[in-house]
Length: 372
Image 1 (cartoon, rainbow, N blue to C red):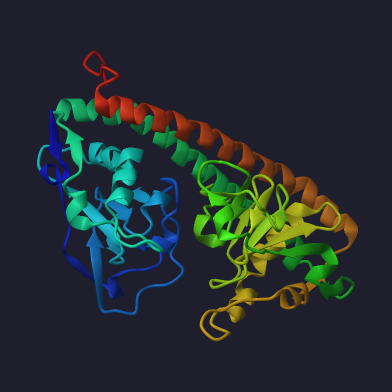
Image 2 (cartoon, rainbow, N blue to C red):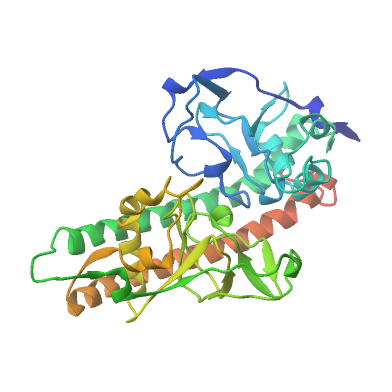
């Protein structure tokens, strides 16, 4: 049997004072990560007095461009922007089960099919509540969640390991490079240690979502924790970033960073930064430290902040002796390799979860005999 989404949940409508929020518990479409990867820390808070409230156990879904599949199971209380939908379960509904209903690719496909607008499609809140869902009792809901939750728990554990590794690597950089810099070190420019490629967008009619051609990233919209999520491809690539190149947003917010998992085409919203002498980890953490310095470019220009190639090349930096860079690279490059390995493991786990999810929801996989 089938029922409607409105039979198992509703939209939370309460408000919360912005004064009660911080960057850790404020959620907007900007700090929700694509492909069901949760959330990250917000860059800023809203300027309004109040905003939408959410509570622990609610499910938050970005309502702008549903094809990015931005969803989060709230593990704390907080507030979010009006472009984020907050779903709260009704009685006798397992919140984890509701999360998997909404995390199913078929829900995002339905959201896109009923969305309003073309350039920036927005989910139709009324239509979403008409979405058909399986009619499972609480015991069956618990079993479905019990199958899928351990996979997500492992993904989240890998994410925590990766964030911890990056934090440790950054601390090593600050200790070895920032704090130990002295007058004997060379004062130079970013262009002395890195080659910079500015993106150029291919023709719009060359884009596709079917995996034909070269992976294409227009800007930071596809950025996640370390590697961007594939959404678009192009058959006419213009500018290429090589595997492990640093991808940097050159339009507001200027300075956001990711790393190219593979060779990819970059559009005009990005630049690719490549070490000139095989110190790619050193250059990456140099860019992390330069993030505050790059903030000066946010808000400059006629409408949005931006940075051009000359300005990026001309950023002043302190360059340590070669032996210091070699030592840093020998310590941190293996840590970055583990981050890549954990990311690849998560890709496999996500594929497994996304294969199991629709089969469990449809009843193709029998859960009656499971003892969870």
